[in-house]
Image (tube, rainbow, N blue to C red; front, side):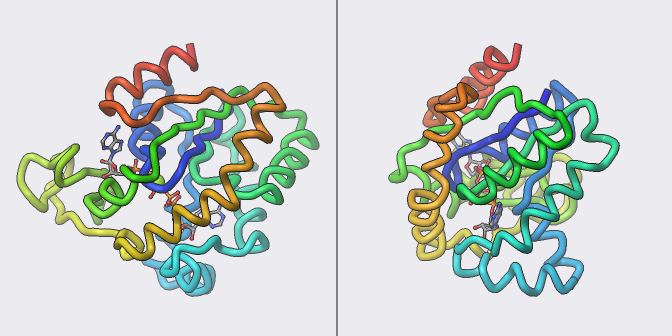
Length: 213
Ligand code: AP5
Ligand code: MG
């Protein structure tokens, strides 16, 4: 199964990706997570990416595309993969198409999670992430059992530095101008599956399972 998760910041890509991994056991490739790991480890890539991420802007394509190509070339991606947050503009989509066609790989589906921008700021600003295992919560919509503590591994929860109102608003604008055109791009290719993401997490996942079955 080779799929892409598309959708604005806070749409629920990461949340649904975790459900998909549990059910379908395919590698979850999130460019945002890869950049955050590099920032945590203090690498050169992390230092460069942070400048853009803190503003809510896209990290340049030359830092992003080869990274994804090399991750997709790893053995665990041979039988399937799930891209989350890549591609994010037309250049990246065309780059991915070229990479996949050279390898004789065909994408199965692009799952487009649609959520009204009005809901996105509250979703992103209320998000809490486990520092250790990466589990995602929301203070109102998906709270942990004990406030500030991860249900899975008991570690402390934290907030992403780009989850503040100003940066989220810019991320939404960047999504509209750079990423949203990909909905049409993949619709024309007959790959898109649109999902109403403004419902309960389990209901959204129910739709995803129907699409993937
Ligand atoms: P990235 O990490 O990809 O962030 P994003 O696309 O902005 O998306 P988010 O992770 O914020 O949202 P999500 O859809 O995963 O939502 P989640 O499931 O967590 O990218 C970060 C940055 O990295 C970018 O700004 C850019 O700088 C850089 N970058 C990354 N990829 C790049 C690329 N390809 N090119 C260039 N730059 C790149 O859910 C959000 C919250 O809502 C959670 O609290 C969750 O619990 C809650 N929630 C989820 N679903 C529901 C629901 N159905 N109902 C109620 N609450 C829900
Ligand atoms: Mg995410």
